[in-house]
Image: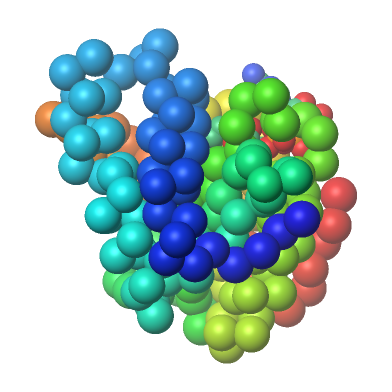
Length: 174
Ligand SMILES: CC(C)(COP(=O)(O)OP(=O)(O)OC[C@H]1O[C@@H](n2cnc3c(N)ncnc32)[C@H](O)[C@@H]1OP(=O)(O)O)[C@@H](O)C(=O)NCCC(=O)NCCS
C-alpha cells in the first residue's frame, strides 16, 4: 500500500533512501563522493526533518511493513526552463531494486499526481541524471518531457540533470 510518511518512519526511510541511492549510482560515482553525499543527505535526523516539513510530502510504498519505495514532493524554487502553470517539484522517486518493474512505481506515481493536485499544483517537474536511462524511460512513459538541464552536486561531483516536466491537467497513464 501507499501511505503518507510520518516522523516515526525516519529511520527506515533513511535506510531505504541511502540504499536505493547507492544501488542506483554506485557504479558511476566515486566512493568518496558517494560517502559524502549519503552523509549530507540521508540519516534519521535529516529524514525526520523532511517528514515534519509542511513544504514536503513523503509517500511510502509499504509492503507488509517493509518499505519498498518512496517519493517526495517539495515546494520551493523552480528552474527557469519550467515555464508552466503552478509547478511543484517531484523531488525524489525511488523504488528498491527487488521491486523495480513490478508496478510499485506506477502506483506511487498515481498517488503523487493526486497529492500534487491536492496541493494545488498543475505541473510536475523533476531533475533526472542525464545517463539514468531507466528512470528517463519511466518518466517519459508517464508523460514527462525534457525541457532543459541543471547541475546537481553528488559530493564534489557536479553532474548534469535533465529537467522533465508534465502537466497535471491531462493525465496520461501508460
Ligand atoms: C525509476 C524507477 C522509479 C522506475 O520504476 P520501475 O519499476 O523500474 O519502472 P518500470 O519498470 O515501470 O519502467 C521502467 C522502464 O524503463 C525500461 N528500462 C529498463 N531498463 C532500462 C535501461 N537500462 N535503459 C532504458 N530503459 C530501461 C523498462 O523497459 C521500462 O519501460 P517499459 O515499461 O516501456 O518496458 C525505478 O527503476 C527506480 O527506483 N530506479 C532507481 C532510482 C532512480 O533512478 N530513481 C529516479 C531518480 S530521478
